[in-house]
Image (tube, rainbow, N blue to C red; front, side, top):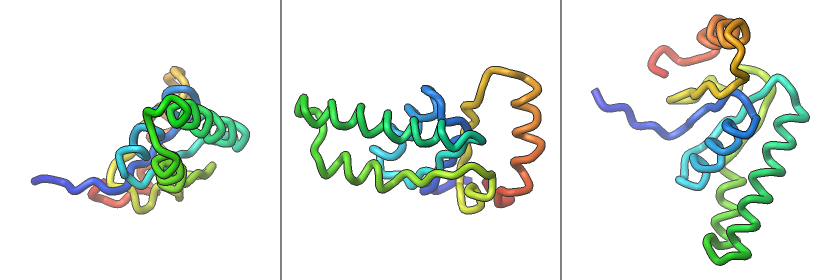
Amino acid sequence: MAVDIKTIGIIGAGQMGSGIAQVCGQSGYAVKLCDIDAAAVSRAMLGIRSRMERQVKRGRASQDELDRTLANIATGTGYEIFADCDLVIEAATENEPVKRAIFENLSAHLRADA
C-alpha cells in the first residue's frame, strides 16, 4: 500500500533536524519541526534562513524558493504538532534514554496510519 506523504514531522531542531526540515521544506512538503527547547527551534529557523540566503546570493535558489521553504515549516515544542503528520523523523540527541522517552510519548499524538 503506497502512502501519499504530504506532511513531515521532525523531532529535534539541532543541526541534523534543521537540515532535514530545510530539505523537506524546499522539496514542497509541509514540515513540523519540534524541539523541547524553544530557543533551539528559533536557532534552527535562523540557520535555515541563513543557509537559504547564502543559496540565493550564490544564484542556487531564488528569493521565492527561500520564502516558500520558510512558509512550509511550522514549529513547536510539543508533540501535538504532529497530529496531522504522515511521517515523523526522529533527529534528537544521541542519548538512548531520551530517544526511548520520545517514542514512548510520541505515539499518543500520531494518527494510526502515520
